Length: 359
Image 1: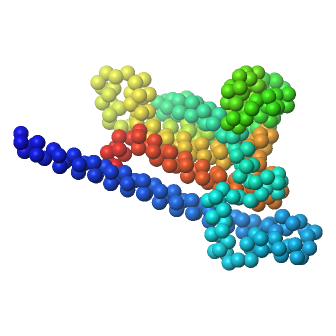
Image 2: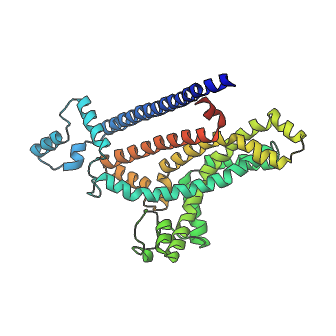
Image 3: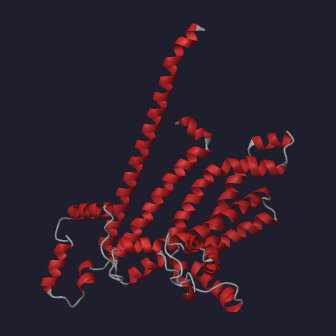
């Protein structure tokens, strides 16, 4: 008894030390990974700014500027310096949130991005809800009916989601559900009669209208959101359903499934609780990547539906040779991907007991 008591004060500190050291290593590794990823992202965007066949000076001063004006702006933009100095200046500005001034709006690019991003976030979140809430159940149903007609329906539906261009789906959806049937509202985020009725808090009209108690505005915004959100959500549904089916097929072949069925558990509980619970770790990564791709790939959807978000802003900026806005939007999307990867890693650790045991 005395020997156990003597060892206890020593073992406990050692255990805490190991846990703390493991936490420090984990945080250091995460910060190192994020830093390297961010440096890679800035390198890519810096190269984009150099390889695009657009003279950044002419984009600012115009093609009728004098030679002296051109040379003055050339030096102000630090283009006369060595390439490595240009990169470090560029990196320093990004770290301070400086992306220059947009040629289209004459506003700082950062303020433009903060203005348009909530619209893209609102659209992407609605699409993600559609993709996850329908894609996961459909993937489970397909896996449990492998080779039968429900599986075939889900597989062919997913294939169509991958194959059909989103702009074509958007145009067909507008023709049928807006122009012919009148079930939903048309392009844009809200009818013009509801403009400026809701104070901007989050930038997302659905949330801001609820905060302000403007329920008529809320339902009008929902009616505008349903069609683009559903079409963009169909693309994410196809990917989520396909991946869920693949993960579930692997789980349903495991021995523990047969063992739990032999013990008398209902097939419903075995599939929807035990098997699906074991694929959530993989699905977290799938959902995070899907959300990132929705934010990135909303360009065509926003163009078809005149949705004033990040995708439409970057498309218009590219056509206007507004390089500052294009690079700023690219950096923003890259940073979002980094954050999503960090969040998915944290959730992965919380959900998977084996990951916690390795820390």
